Amino acid sequence: MSLSPTLVPVMKKKVLFSIVLVVASLAVGLVAGFWMPRDDDFFALRKSYQVFGALYEELVVGYVDKLDPEKMMHTGIDAMLQDLDPYTNFYDEADNADLNIMTRGRYGGVGLSAAIFDGKITVTAPVEGTSSYRRGVRPGDVITEVAGRSTKDLSLDDVRNLLRGEPGSTVQIMIAREGAPEPLSFVLRREEVKLKNVPFSGFVGGDTTSGIGYIKLDRFANEAAPEVRRALISLQKTDALKGVILDLRDNPGGLLEAAVEITGLFAPANAVIVSTRGRQPQTERSYQSKLAPLAPDLPLVVLMNGYSASASEIVAGAIQDLDRGLILGTPSFGKGLVQIVRNLPFNTSLKLTTAGYYSPSGRSIQKIDYRQHDGHFGSIPDSLRHAFTTAAGRTVLDGRGIEPDVTVSLGVPSALEQALARQAEFLFYATHFAAEHPLSDAPGQTAEARFFETFGDGDDFEVSDAVYSDFQAWLHARNFVYRTPAEQGLKDLSELLEKGGYNGVKDQMEALGKALQREKTDDFNRLGKQLKARLRTAILAHYIGESAQIRASLAHDAVVDKARRLLLDHTAYKRAFGGA
Image (cartoon, rainbow, N blue to C red; front, side, top):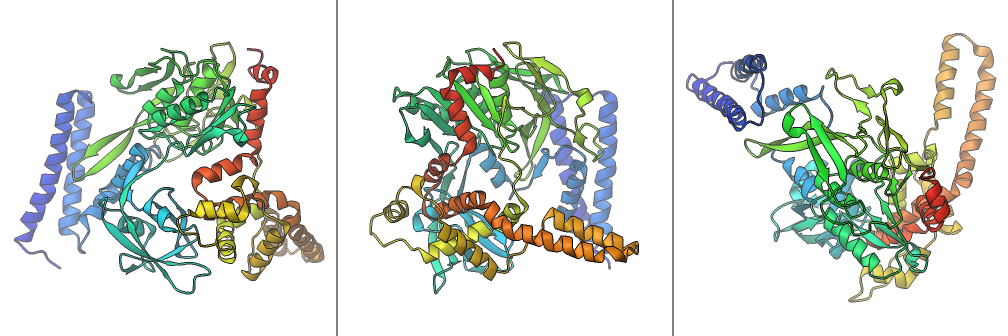
């Protein structure tokens, strides 16, 4: 195999031009003062880059088989980043749309969340207020075609890219829905989909008498702080607000500035909320609340769990260190690293970790140590953790995320519950339930209004014993199976004993296996309360929007109930501060 003599110089020029572009951009960075390496660092950088560029050129131009230059470059980039922390990422042109969603909380599309189950592109949730939601696309719907293309051989990213586009344009999708005899066609209008940072706020249980407000914050995009401010003002206008629950559970974070502004709604003016420190001097910065707080003395409980990360931990850490409120739930994720986005040529970008952030007491909440840069990561050992002091003198430790003042754990889901969730059985049964219980046609009425008319208020909707029995029968018909850790352990032990020649215990192993099967059979009775709650959530998602779903969930939320009771009991609230 040989290359055309005229093609080689052209390809070389293109590769060399790309190299010149990058070197030029480095030079600009040097002149701008963003990064001033030492002479030895600069020599190592220049030498390594020349070697890499020459190697890359030789491979693309001269390798025996034709290579994809872009794929080769991606491979090289991925290799460079894999030994760093998982938050330093390269985004190509297609990925930049996802980056915009993370930072701006909006994108051009039809408002569909989807996943792959059993090899099928399945809707998990239409975004409330978007074209897909208004037109009646439901969770559990299987997308069979997008823009005239079958989804059979398309990836999830392919489908997302086809659905996204210029606001105002349209895209047709075909849906297979249980209970519908024929495929359903939807023409959806693309629009700027703005994801709500605060999908719900109100009084717990709708009860203004007790006066406990609730604000659910899902992300820290650009409009997060104004949305929380509006929610808080709305609760205060009732003159009934006695305490507030800020729910940051499952919130992965977002913009640092949004976290600072939200904390400032409760924290004293000019208080340090967070500081950042990195290798370069310009990364050292202190962030303070700039405005007078909206609720300076209002009793406050912040809810956290293991999926609360980054900006969520900035808020919780500041609230805890300033003794402004209580943290309730389970330890947070432990992400104490700061990223910035640097634009690169050809509409690509780099999300780059530049610093760590530190709470007002000076502690880092970073849980995993990535500093070795050798691909081996582990939790920061107890021996390297440090103690810090809150404003009122309480002791807090670094290195484990934000540890709650009051621990409330719902426990680890059972093997049965995890298997049902992993195989999306709650979602698919809810689809089956919706097909068996269609809402009456009522022109001009939303699906939510028709649901309330048929089933009553979402707060009062319960999964009956009859529905739960039907769920079990439906699972049996689908040949649902799962394996518990105990079963796997027994299987491994049996194989080990058999290999060792211990055949005399075969009867005991079989008896133990039968006993485990009896335990599994009883799991549906023993875990009925938890499984009914999961079913209730999945069924409600088919009929009502996200805000109504959250409102309906509060009465069944043990963590919210604990926070509510703590806020109503002033003595218990103060005691949780350790006498502070």
